[in-house]
Length: 349
Image (cartoon, rainbow, N blue to C red; front, side, top):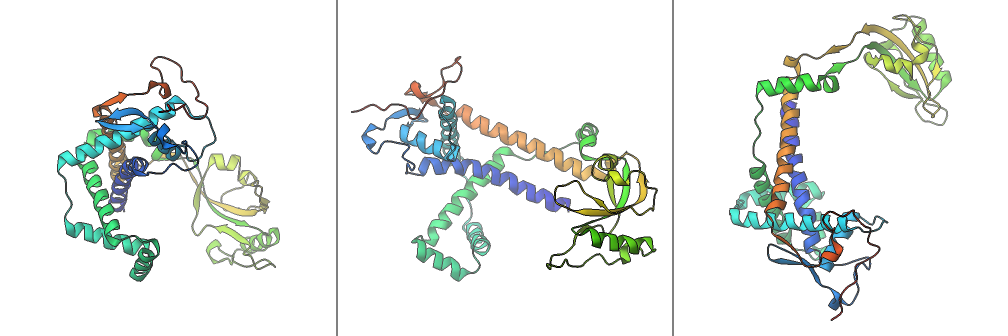
C-alpha cells in the first residue's frame, strides 16, 4: 500500500512540475488576446522586457494575466505584471536548460505513452480517430506534444533529484509531528447509525433493546417516497473522540458501556436522527514509531521533494537574464504596490 502511495505521489510531484511549466508555455505560445484585453490595433503593442534575449511584448503580458487571473474582476497591479514576467522567465530559462541538457526520450517510450493517452482519454481507438477528424488535428501533433512533456518531466525529475532520509531524521520528524499524524485521542468505541426517519430509528432501537446484536439488526429499508431511511451505519465499532461527545453525540454522554442510546436528533441542519451504543473506552495514545516508520519516511520524503522543487523553480528564475524595457508597468523597488486601473497606455507609432 505504501509503495503504491509513494509511486502515486512521485508522479503527482512530476505532474505538478509539468503543470507549472506547461501553464507558462501555454501563455507564451497562445497567440490570442481574448476578452478585449489589448487594443485591436496591434501596432500599439510594444516590448516591455527582454528575457535571455527574447523580447516580451505588452500583448504577451496581457495573455499571461488572462491565464493567471482566470477572469477575476479586480484591478491589475504592478505585482501582477511582475508575477507574469517571472513566469515567462522561468519558462524561457527552463526551455534553454532543457535544450542544453540534450535529454531525449526513446521512440518506444513515446509510443507507449501515446497508447496510454488514447486508452485513458477516449473510450475506444475509433473514438480517438473520430476526434482527430472532427478537430482537424493529427495524431503526430499529440505524439510530439507528449514527447515534449516527457522530456520536461525527465529534466525536472533529474533536476529535483532523489531524496534520502536517515533513520535519525525520520525519528526527529516523528517526534515533532506525532501529535498531528499519529495521535489517537481519548474517547469511546461506538456503534452508530444515522436515519432520515425518526420512526425507523425507533424501530431499530427497539430491536437492539430486545437483545438483537448490532451486526444482526436489519437497518436497511425505504421511506414512503422510495428513498433509503438509513444514512450511515457502522459495521464495526468506530472511535469517537471525547470532543465528539461534547458536540455531535452529547445525548450519549451519560450512558454506560453497552447501553443503547435513545433516538436523538443530530444538530446538523438536515433532519437526521441517530442511535448509538458505546462498546469500549479508549485513552489517548500514539502509534509507535516502528508501526508507522514507512509513513514517516514517506511524509518526510515528500516534504524534502517539495523543498527541492521549490529550490529548482527559484533557481530557474535566478539564472534567467531579465532586462526591463518599460518600467512603467512593473513595481518600483522600495515603493508600496500601487493599483493600475485598466491597461497601461501604449505608444503610438
